Length: 617
Image (cartoon, rainbow, N blue to C red; front, top):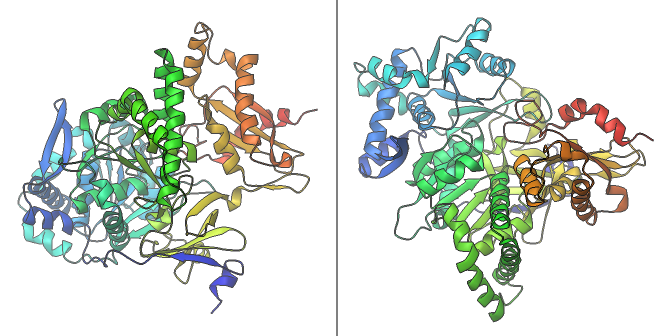
């Protein structure tokens, strides 16, 4: 057998962490029935109804899941069948997941923003026998392609009462029929098929088992349970606003149900919609992507500037970062911690600034977890200084979400942490990150060649580039397939440079280009709300925001962001020219994945003329 070191590029540096949680038995749905027997009155979920959050006990949820499972059986769904779910994040998605798992069926998530061709591909490849849709638009999308889906026998629409109709159909089905199928589900059974985001080609279906999800959820509950429940005497609660079509959202759902953490749902990932929902729900813990933390910081800064308190905010932010950095060093054994003077300043700003920011998130959040992309070190320190420690992690769909997470009490901001318990991480000579553990998937649906390329002797090649420090903390530096090689032969991983430009409040997105070009350049989009605020504070709100793209003062502002990013790289790697684009890259335009990652090839094609002009003359 080929040795691992040779397979991933010669010598290997590896870090492993012993498992905390034992291997789970049975399927994911068992938790619902076991919890209802053990603690029937536990408030397992909350659902938004009649203008407030209504509690759902473990017994009530079990009864709803069982009733829906019986209805699914009457509609012909059988053990091993695949059923697609195309919806935003909502209570009914969780209900369908557990009802399908109760009869050994397999939910297949579909992003509600997916194009008809993407939906057709997923439903055809998975041979879905039915599809749950949210609204009439989704139903029309399925209806337009159903002739190409011979296995599809049903379309059930949430907004037209499909849950009640299915429950009514199943009233005569004995409970024992559901339990017989549920008890036949084990950790090795397929739980779901989640499609990759498709940043490097057509999305592939990842086969994730009940055991994969149980290992991930139970490990997070065992290792991070203390921070999930850091809410004083009030029971822990989490508001799920991440897409349930993404693996991160599904893991949050499973962990909450398995851990007895009250779960609520919110459909929109925009700060204008999310912040009022957080204030009403008052979660004890936050699961989010860096975009959310960036927007919260940006909105707080804008509010302070509008109130004439910008100088106070910036001073408070500086103290928060300094205070958190000193505490970080002490936790890692490298320093004495914050000085007496720094503690006094931090306490003063806590009363004037930090308390207000925590109140925006409901007032109970003291810890959070971030994944999906990179969170800057400075932003992580800022939130820790405000009183909300963000534990950044790293993972893929193929690894059932996180394979590394910063540990409680010892985060290294700017890294994605060491391997989670029961997981190993290795770095090949070419810098690729390889992972191994109970959360690694079973392969790609109908793609044995791709599965063989990704998996070797239990190890998963992630395609990401990274480095491990002496304590086993991982830092992600880019993607193998995204390396830029200039015409002078200089290699550049654009990820870190782009993230540094994006740290500026005005910048929404940055795409670095330069393959086979004489120097590095960038396409930059601006945040519309931040741009409107920038114009207003300069008394120019009457100016059309996008007409301002040619404004010399605005260019100078963005140039400062680019210059700041350039200080971290050599001249050969620095951005020499940039172009401001009049529109953000969007999922609807095919330029972002549903998880908000850049589709580089599509962007380069769309803006080919702009790129050529960057190098003209």
